[in-house]
Amino acid sequence: MVSNRPARHVRRPDVRRRRPVVRLVLAGGVLVGLGAGLTSGAWTDSAFFQSAASSASVDLQACVTATPTNPSPTWTCTPADTSGNAAAILPSTTFSGMTPGHVYTTKIRVLNNGTAALTVTVGYTALAEPLTGTAPNATVALDTTSFALAAGAAQVVNLTITTPTTWDQSHANQSSAAALQVLATGTAS
Image (cartoon, rainbow, N blue to C red; front, top):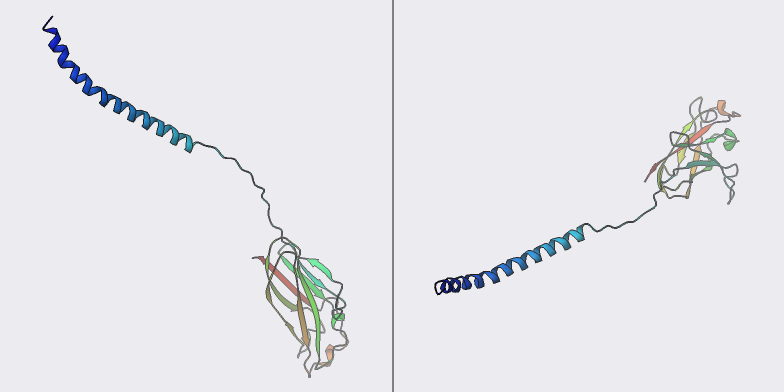
């Protein structure tokens, strides 16, 4: 039995040396496992939210009035066509009594009846007498041709027609239901 004791006695210091190392490795494994579990839990957390979505509307209108000098004129508006152009058609009665060498003014109102802000471009086309025909013809001018228009806002554009002093007599007493077209085109800002 004496021979068995020294062998046990030798093994014991090895076992004692290994226990702290094994404990340290096991503790490190527990820490790594715990850290991985916490990290995994942090990355798999769920959050829910909801939000409403809507689209803007575009509704550009061109408006004319029979009383442009009235401080609060009554406007008749025409919505834009499918190509996005709003046209104000002015009859020759808007410029009744035109004579050579005079200036005539009227107003066009451009209305953004939609919910989107627009950049508006305005132009015109002379369609019939007394603004077309035998030269020299009257000249047409707009006080503005491009402007920003917020949703729900309106812009009044002044239109001036000047007849030359040598305006041909053939223009006198001419009338047309559509003498001038003012065209407003809007693009989303």
